[in-house]
Length: 79
Image (tube, rainbow, N blue to C red):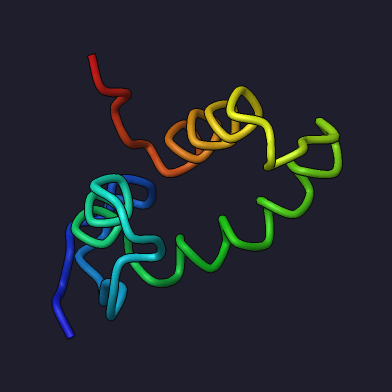
């Protein structure tokens, strides 16, 4: 398992075994976020979806969730 310098907590820690989703963003998360912070996001994600009443079948809502994910994990937004 690879050690990553986590963008959220700043520690050098164990990373994810595989990207959390099949996309460039999934690979970015795998390369930049430790397993502990990803687990914290998985718990927070449920709260975010419920709080904002996101419908993940809607492109705008998926984009919103990705942006909130980036903010939570300390990842830069693509330009």
